[in-house]
Image (tube, rainbow, N blue to C red):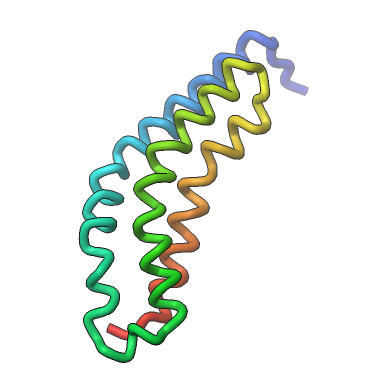
Length: 109
C-alpha cells in the first residue's frame, strides 16, 4: 500500500485549492457577461410569468457573486484550519453553475 506523508497531502490539498481558485477566476468573465445579459431571459412575454425564468435570472446574477465570494470565503476558512468548510465554499460556484445550466434548459428560447 502506498503511504504518503502528511506534508505531501497538505501540499496536494493546497494545490487543489489553488487550481479551483484559478478556475473560478477564469470563469469570472463568463459570469459577468451572464449577469449583464440576464434580463434577456424575459425577451418572450410569456417568460415574465414563468417561475423558472425568474429562478434562472436570479441564478445568473448570483453566479457572478458566488464566483467572487466562494474562493475568498474558502481561503478564509483554510487559514482558520476549517478545511471541510473551505472545500464546501470552493465547491459552491461549481454547484451553482450546474444548477444554473439545469434551470436554463427549461426556459423557452
